[in-house]
Length: 366
Image (cartoon, rainbow, N blue to C red; front, side, top):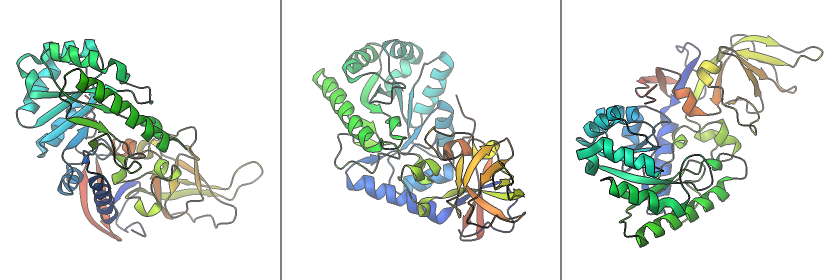
């Protein structure tokens, strides 16, 4: 896509179908060449149409973040879902999981003795239908236990009537400059140690799950037998800065219009303002990022500030400031946030609109 189609009203999320399909097939090829299963995290796009493309390209199943997301994708035909989250199960959750497991293969995460006990009690007779993966902390220090505590959690799950089938981790610390390679190495060590300890304790560990978009393509042969990248389908400004994708691999942008422009005087910077703010771009900005997003066709420009409906773009001194009414394409920093802010997206091929897809799993936070 080289220009915003004339019929688009801004701001609007645009998905380049051709680049999207290239990204999907590229990751499937890379992961398949390692002899690993691909289980993409669909919280990035939240769209059944894209999940179907991923499954058709060889994904063995889907990863989701919540029961609500699982319900949406199972309703649209998915038959193998992993809720990669340390769930605390209530009776209401248990009823929903039991319903899901009656029509699909369902796995969930846990990272504590207490959560495993609560899960077993709530699920009761449905416990054997659902697989449990113990979450391991491989250096991100969010959720997950150290490999040394994996056996304790797994034993408590088994005692509660649950079926432990594997371990998983999320190397989230790979989302920082200079960290993808180190995070991938730490992931391998943590998964190898935890799986070995569990097998020595008598557990049949069939699933060793890892991976993130920054790390999925890094390692050669891996101790993991499945990976769960998500952002790769679209790419975003964070992945650009981490050099984990190129501009040619950006499949999602936000069409925006220049509504204000200023050549700059005194201490005021040379800038333009777009009609897309935090309510569509998202406000995520890591400390290391150079701005709140990038411009697809002007990578030297920087989005210096966001309001709810404004994006302030600092323009380079050696480039002509765009005229009022100019339509530009914004690459959000964190594309997962953008997809949870809109009800639908426009799908394009070249300069033509070919479809509109609903974000069916938007807002499914529980």
